[in-house]
Image (cartoon, rainbow, N blue to C red; front, side, top):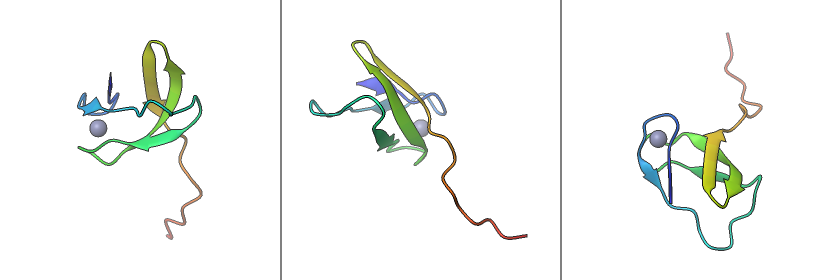
Length: 54
Ligand SMILES: [Zn+2]
């Protein structure tokens, strides 16, 4: 369990999660990258290649 850096909601990290994996915050849907597991540490995932258009 860790906190979302965006909205501070509790984000559960599964036991088989690995560093570098992306999880989604259940509250704000932000994608979070797992930086560490012991202790759990989350950071905003880098923006994926989305085409935002003009
Ligand atoms: Zn969040």
